[in-house]
Amino acid sequence: MTSEQTGSDFDSANLPGPNRFIYVVSGCLLVAVAGYYAFTAMNTMGLATHHGNAIVVGKYFQEAGTSSFSQPIGNQQIVRVQETPEAYIAKVKINEQQTECALDKPLYEEVSPGDQLNVEYQVTRLTGAIRITKATR
Image (cartoon, rainbow, N blue to C red):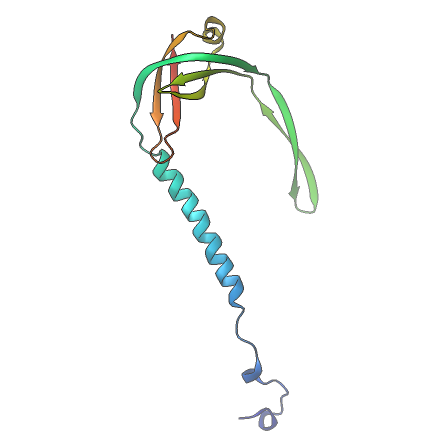
């Protein structure tokens, strides 16, 4: 049946096909996000805990602070405040790699560069980064 027979000016045969660009971009974005989470899971989940000694090469104190950001809620921009707690950080060297670990205040005040700490740490599978989970004297 033609448009002349139905009395309509609408001809579905002349419509363009669906825009495949949005499907390709959406698919690529979905694969990228899934790949990121898969990489993170493979790299960090279920790691063995190792025990060892680390040498303190430096330390610093990060003061508590606040930062603000605006968040759109409905038709309004709401300003949200985010507090950052104080942190006592030691830079340590373990297995010829340098990393940082958080210490409690008494231990932070007790150690100085060149001191040795007993640490529990994990080594990530794919990147080989060291994550210190516990540090004691």
